[in-house]
Structure formats: C-alpha cells, structure tokens
Image (spheres, rainbow, N blue to C red):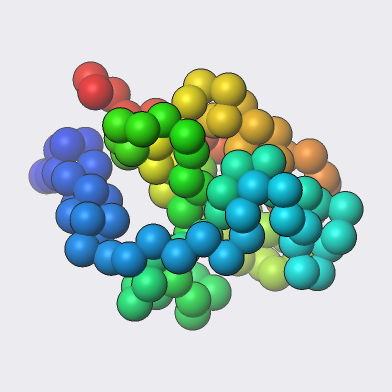
Amino acid sequence: METNSDFWNAIEKIVRNSKIIIDRPKGSTHPKYPDLIYKVDYGYLANTNSMDKEGIDIWLGTDPRKQIDAIMCIIDLIKKDSEIKILIGCTEEEKEIIYKTHNETENMKGILIRRNNF
C-alpha cells in the first residue's frame, strides 16, 4: 500500500512538470456565474486531464514558498461530477476563502484535505 507521502509526491511531480495557466485571476468573475468573483488566482495545469476533460484545476496563492500542502475535493451537483483542486502556495486565509468558495451554494460542496507532517 502506498503512503500519503507517495500521493503528495505525485502531486508535486505533476505540478513541477506542468505549466501553470491562470485563466481566472483574482478579482475576475466566473464565465457562467457572474456573481462568483475569484478572490484567489485560479487556473489549471497545462497538458493534464481531469474529470471535466480539461486541465487539473489549481488555486495559486500568494505565499512565495509555493508549497503544495492541501487539496480541495469537490462534488458539483449541477455537472454531476467531482474533482480535486490543488492548492499551491496558499496562506491559511486563502485556504479559508477557497473552502468557502466551494461551499457557498447548495450545488457545490467541498472538503479541504491538508498534507500531514509537512
């Protein structure tokens, strides 16, 4: 059985070997839901795939160390899918904002999973 460290090392490897694309910078609005304003940079990893057949989603925070120490696992009741979102360099305040963003409607719910012993 693999350990949690194997999982986090795999995430670090895919992030390290992918270009980060920020297509929804802080302050921008969601293309389909204009009431949703991004309070943290949001984007994806180029040349990766996720459940929605697009790149793996990421939140890019302001911590200059750019540590990967959490992910959001979400369920979307409208799209009837689930995904992970990798948090890169997010401060504790940004993690709270991201958590609230994924839980502010009845149509989407998420949990924040923190990296242990990091």
